[in-house]
Length: 241
Image (cartoon, rainbow, N blue to C red):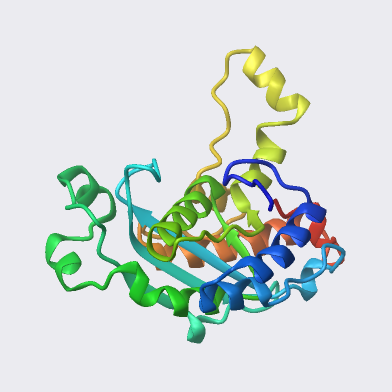
């Protein structure tokens, strides 16, 4: 069995084998169906790839101590954002909200009181993600948080490849020789946060820290990144992680 942890780097070949193996090992029907739905081949041109932008608001940054409170998904391709198929859920965390968390994501105690547990919407969420390449801005939130939450409820996790728009910005603005030279000069690094990244492409500012709005913002950002720095024929393997 693959000993893959959420923050380990996994190659394209590893992902393909991992997904196939997990479809045989999974015991939960929804998870089995998720893994059994084929993803595009790593050589597929990005213009041919069905995608879904995913964003989560959480009570903190550590999936071992904090929890998901809302999830937004927006299916899209390079040429079209399918807003009619968008989904948004507020879910009840296992521990009470603290005031700092509420101030950050603006989800209140009354909203949480009426919300379902993540387990109640999990089958629908996995169906939305199945067969699509998931796109996020900073994979070290969505990937480990979802994996930990699913393990806690179904006894087995869900890891999968992603396109990380923050990582694509980091390639351009944090990992180049010019970026290293700027650091050597003592200049602050270029921001690769979502709104700052969108500004570089002339995209409008959206109100942040709402899972559905941030998912839409991420989908638009990837479209702009591909149009500016890549080609429609760029193979998926060049940009997923």
